[in-house]
Amino acid sequence: MPPDSKIADLAPSAPELTSYDEQHAVTYMRLLDAEADNADWREVSRIVLGFDPTLEPDRARRAFESHLARAKWASRHGYRDLLRRGWPKSEQ
Image 1 (cartoon, rainbow, N blue to C red):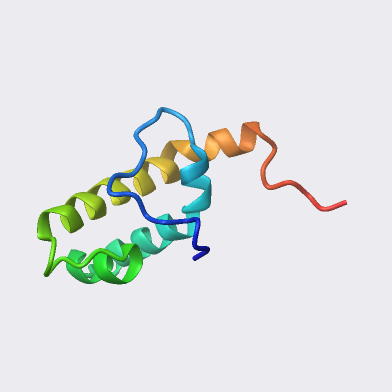
Image 2: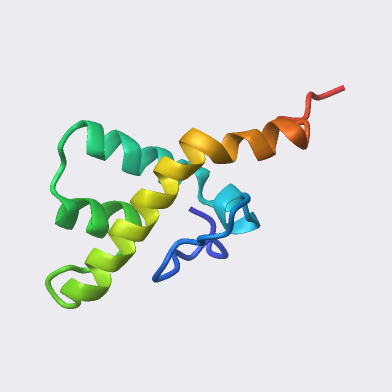
């Protein structure tokens, strides 16, 4: 992940995709994959989001839950914003 793609404590809650969402699309996919695999939230928070649930359990849990909720929202609704914008841009 690029250094400027730091994971925020809480994912966005805007009714449209944000630049944060676009920067973290791979993170969202990893969260959805982890959920499908029934991975433990603590492991996912540590590995995917970079939060240590041993040191900061509440913060890690909030970050995990908000990012997973946003990933689900993006997969169900947010992709429409990308299609309206003509994403992905085809190379010419």
